[in-house]
Length: 439
Image (tube, rainbow, N blue to C red; front, side, top):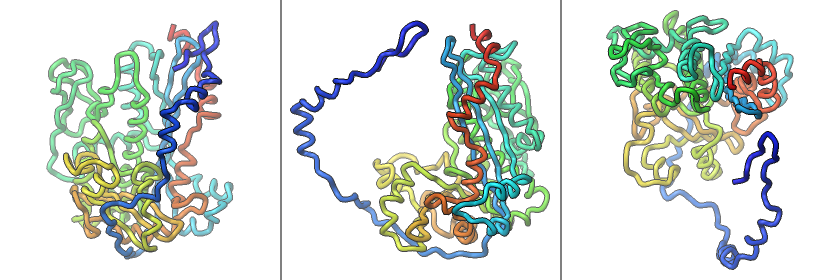
């Protein structure tokens, strides 16, 4: 590990001759001679590919994506901020059919999206920066709560969606909010009354936000917050923004759900403390299914172990087929671990994993809800599978292999690059104020 540059001296550079010891090593030479290339390995368990059957395509697509970029300051005291951006895009499939999906005209896309995009931006103090009158820990708690309560166009609608999920307000049972760790006294006794946004800890009387129930504070120290806090916020906000549209349709006219496909970039999954939302999401999806207003929801994974496994086995699969993954196969063939422990995704996933091959070029990993958790899901368990698979070929992008144009558009709006985005945001901030606060 090299020494880093300081205020007066340069950093340490790697040796230009360090490779000599490697190429002269007898052990290295023997190992290289013993290595041999292999053909691509085949899974020990044969994939269960089944033919795709489709139904009526869906006409309106909502797609959500988010982006996070760290903003470090190179000078002492090495302040660090984190910027999050989330975008929800609405697309009418009939309008989309007018576009060239390989080279869409940017001005036409601008006109299409001008009235159908919801954006959200938030900024987090992560290191050596504070807000007057409070420390980083409580500042981030407030930023998370205010970010969900104050949307430029939606007002507090996103926070209302969190309440709707947390208190299961689609039903009339009015369940209590389970106890959680108080951000003040750390006792596992905190709760908030039904349908409330704030409350007080019964142990220490400290003020509580509904967002504290999710557990953002559990990752933070008093004066610093890791990048994961901002990334967690992005993931949760993506979910809540998408479910805001679902909730508003459900409350206004649930029959409209039968026309819409909701697309999330990434798996239908929440991990660590945020997984407490998963059982409530499953309950609603199960409830809506049996109320005959099913929600057509799909997540697409563009990288990771499942994507790599599809690349490995996809060429041998017949065109127009799908493979619904099950617990044992996931553990042994994809995660490469023993078939022991808890079932895959039992506490974290609200969608089953499916490998889909439309043709040689268009293969993808998707997740579709089953409502209640299914360890070994079947095609009949997947909510809206036939209608979803009828819609996906009609919204394929020709710019990326296996790409979906709504996801591509949402990503284009939400994405933040390290350069120039991070640099411009840094210049936009009041660096002198931040620096003086850090000192």
